[in-house]
Picture 1 (spheres, rainbow, N blue to C red):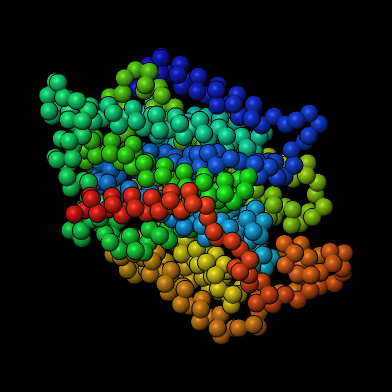
Picture 2 (cartoon, helix red, strand yellow):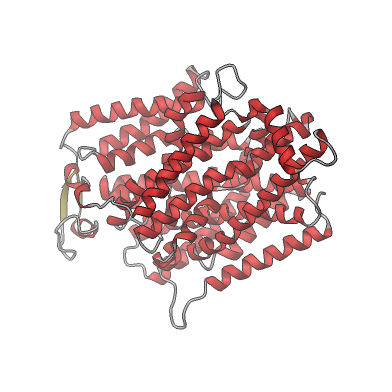
Length: 557
C-alpha cells in the first residue's frame, strides 16, 4: 500500500469535488426538462476549452498512463508517435472533416453513414460499434483501471471495478455530455499536475542517484539524456528493440495515420465533443488546443518511464510496473494527487464511452424503431443504456481479460482488424461521389478478412505496417467494385424517411409509399462546404506541424 492517510484524504476530497461539480453543472433552469440535445450533445453549447479538455481527458486513461510509461521504460520515446501523429491528425480533421459533419448537422457516426450510404449500413455499423465499445473498449478501460488501482494502492480488483463503475455513474448519468465535458476540464488539470509531479521527482531522483547529493532536476535531465540516449530515438532502426511494434519510418507514412485518423475523426466516443461545440470555430479552436496537449503529453508520460529505466533496472521483465515504482518517489500528499490524476483519467474515459454508447443506441437504434418517442423518453432510454452498459462491462471484464497478459493488445487485436475498413468507408463516402453500398461492404469485410489472413500467414509483418497494407488493398478493391456496379445500387425507403435525410431529397414528409434513392443521389456536395479557417487557426495549425517536424529532426539526427 503506497498511500498514506494524507494521500487518501486528498483523494477523497477529489472524489467529493468532482461529483459535486458534475451535479452543479447538470442543473437545468426551472421548468426546463433535459431533451436529447441537452443530454447527448450538451445543447451544442460547449466552448473551445471544454471541447479540447474533454478530448484529452476522454483519450487518456490507464493504458496511456501506466502503459505508455511502461513502454517508455521498455522501448523509449518512439512510443510517443501515437501522441505526436495524433496532434497532426487533429489539425487535418478540424479543417477538412469537421466542417462536413457540422454542415450536414451530423450528431452520430451511424447517422452520417445513413446520410451517405443508407439505413441498412447505419443500423449494421451502429450495432457493430455498440459491441466494440461495450465488450472491447469499456471492458478494457475498466479492467486496466482496476489493475492500476490494485498495483498502485493495493485495491482489490473486484472492488476497483465496482468503484470505477459507481463513480462514473455518479457524475455522468444525470447530466450527460455536459457533465462529462465540464468535469473533464478538472480532470485534465489534475492529470497534468500529477504528471508534472511525477516527472519532477523522477528527474530529481536520477540526479541525486547518479550525479550527486547537490544535483538539481536539470542535472538529472542532462544525465538521463546522455546515459539513455538510445531511449530518445523517435524513429527506430530494424535492429533496435521495439521495431516490431513501431516499424521505423514506415510507421510515419502508413499505419500511424490510419490509427489516428480513424480514432480522432470517425470515432463517436471522441468526435462527439466537437459535434457539441457552439459552432465550427469553437470546435476547431478546441481541437487545436487538444493537438498541442498531445504534443505535450509524452513529456509527462513517457519521459518518466525512461527515467525509471535507469532508476529500477530490475523491472526489465515487467516494465508496466514502472509507473507504480515511480509513485514511491512522490512525497506524501502529492502521491494522493498523482493517484487522483490516474483515477481521473480512467473515470473520464469510462464516462465518455458510456455517453457515446447511450447516444448511438438511443439515436441510431431506439429512435429509428420508435420514431414518435418523446424527448423525455429518449433521455430516459439514454440513462438506462449508460447503466446497463456499465453493468455488462463490469460483469464481463474479468472473464474476458483476466487471462490476457497484455490487455492493451486485446484492444488492438479486435479494433485493429476493422480500423482500415472503417476509415475507408468514411473517406470514400466524403470525398468520392461514386462510392456506394458495395464500396462500404467490401471495405468492411475486406478489412477484417485480410487482417486475419495476414495475422495467420504473415505474423512477422509489424502490426502498423499490416494495417497500411490492408488499407491500400481494400481501397483498390472498393474502387474496382464501385466502378463495376456503377449506378446499379439503389435503396427503397419510406418517403417520410427520405424527407428526413437533412433535406437532401425534396419529398413531402407526410407522403406515403416508398422513394427509390440511387447511390449517386447520396453523394455529398462538397462545393457548399466552407473549409476556410481563421488566421489564428492557420497559425496554430502550422505551428503543430512545424513543432512535429522539428522534434523528429532534432531527436533523430
